[in-house]
Length: 334
Length: 297
Image (cartoon, rainbow over all chains, first blue to last red; front, side, top):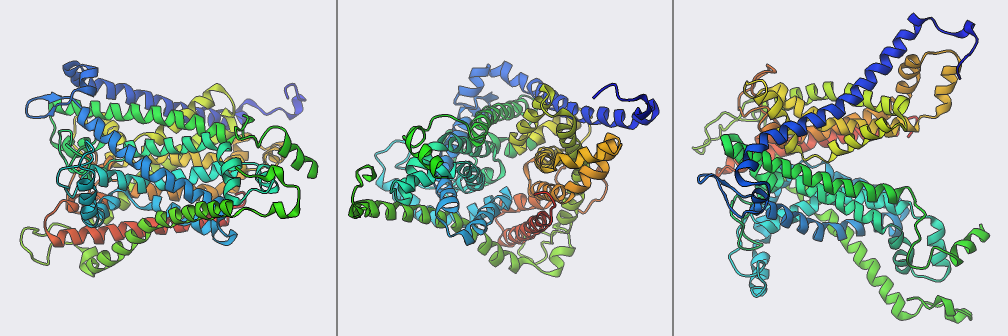
């Protein structure tokens, strides 16, 4: 709207606060960008000696983390992170999605929001409290059953055999599963809420039971979004530090089995950074960098999936509910 | 699959026993999983109350955790320094993150909108959301400890916490600001108000309850973080007030006490955890109550 009457135009002085505000706010926004880029560059700089010493691939894939010998192959740490996060997804995602389905589709209307609040309370519990509870309650209580599983499955490599220690990979994964539950559940619920009620009604109108409706109308529609929610949970699990540090033990070698002590990337930083010097410190920065890049990738994929899903895209849904029949039917009825 | 397609007679509408069984089974499994999800919450809260309340006493809140832990004396000390440290460091972090985060959100909604630069900023705020908290600690360590050649200090811990709060504040503020009807802005502009007045007198006051909710949730999150403080705020047991000094914090105190072999110290960790969780739940409750009074959301 340019070229208004000169009468209404503000004097340059009166326009000053506006210009200043816009400039200041733009500056703030630019500051965020600059800050992240700056941090990243500095982190790479600090990690460089370790990468130069071990090689980038050597750092990531050498199974040799030996501080006193000056060797820093972070494979045991990386695997520890992947094992615990993998377990977290394995246990956490089905439970979280089921909770979301119950809260969005099956629960009596009165308790739905209360249920959501309760699950979100899990997110309010600090990481260190999970660690405290995990090591003094969960791990001792489960040790017997873990040993039983380990004995029964002794023929399976990495799972069976061996004595169960109180801190171990399995407990780490279990604690992480509880910790990612609220976010996976909340985002799944959001995604489920984007399923058009036409689809649900069409399925029910064709005589589907509640479960059949969920299976043919709800789940196919939000598959990508639920995968995205799980990926966000994975990002959380990978970066989770203190709880894992407390319950995973601190064995710098790759643990011999699932119920033995291990280590993770985040845990090694929390544990060793305080007294690390020189190359060791650089190696810990490198571990932080690997962690950073890993979470960045996982989160980027997750964001794409979730935003595409919650924008209610027009992708054809596979299970035959979308195109043609039911939709036009319900459209005509409406 | 359902045989709904063949339905011709009313009798055929009846759901077969097999399908009904499967429906019941699936719904039962979903309900069971939901109950399983709530079990840890109940167990954690139960144990926190059972173990934590036993550790609480007046001296628990009024003494520093400097007592001797090697002998089983009752005087291992309380958590005064940790409570004060958490309040001071989180307060300073909030003082930095709230204006910055809200400012960025206002810019995104009022100026940036759909420009490529706004998309870049949004993307980077998302990136910040996903950064593990320990990496924030590393960032600040590099910049403020290595960079200045000095030792740890409370304000460095605050910077790390502020980084952590920033994306939470920005994202929640952006969501709230987006909900403000553009009619409000347009009427103010049409009355001749300059942009900065529209923002400060119309947009922000309307959004205030929602903004406060987001801020409280960000504070609650920062209060529970251990990892960013480990090598920024330093480790101390004493009560310090100076922002350049080492400072204790509740999560750090728990982390230190967890590894102790002494029962009394572990009990103190439970008491500290109960204190911390109570604080955080209180903030969450306040956030919920305020958001209920919000004009827009």
